[in-house]
View 1 (spheres, one colour):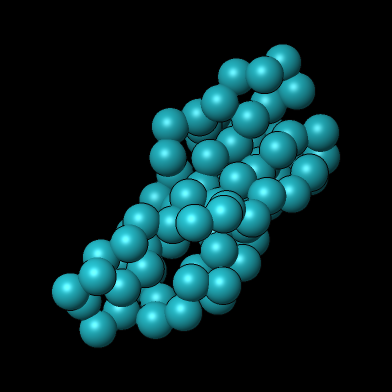
View 2 (cartoon, rainbow, N blue to C red):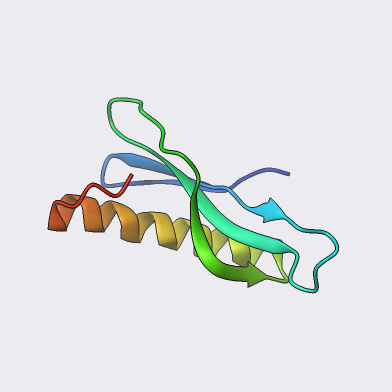
Length: 80
């Protein structure tokens, strides 16, 4: 499975979707964030966010990553 990724505010965000094949909503959204220095976060999951479609789960995962980058850079909270 190829993961989507994007560049956002000098960070690389990579969708990290976990498959759960026996579930009616088989994809759990999450992301990895790599900062400008090359450090990659642990998987940042979205609590209780499951999707039936892989592509949708990946796009939501990237949006979640962008929101986390914004939170860390704009609010000064250590998020990842």
